[in-house]
Length: 138
Image: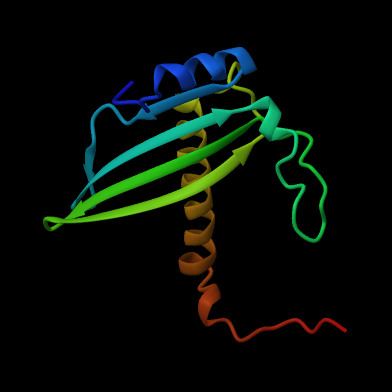
């Protein structure tokens, strides 16, 4: 585990009492891939009190009953000396006991690996982007 989030002692005590967990994981050794250095970091927050009402605002107003963790993912790339930072968020029904930050980061990486492979086949192998065939929905 790399440099995880720092929580003030009073906050840590309050969270412990409420059953809140915060885990973090940083890729231990950033790797150079495709001519760029990459580093990934994921923070996963599980707050039973807040998770119970997430999604209950807006036009639908129904809570997300299976939400267990909210995640923040930071991807930092260095390409030709220029740093690019991308932050995204995710939600999951996996509890912290089933999937901590390290496992969630692996799951996200595997998901995008599969997603990118599928698109490669459709875009390049089947040349789908240039296809003029369309379907009409009536």
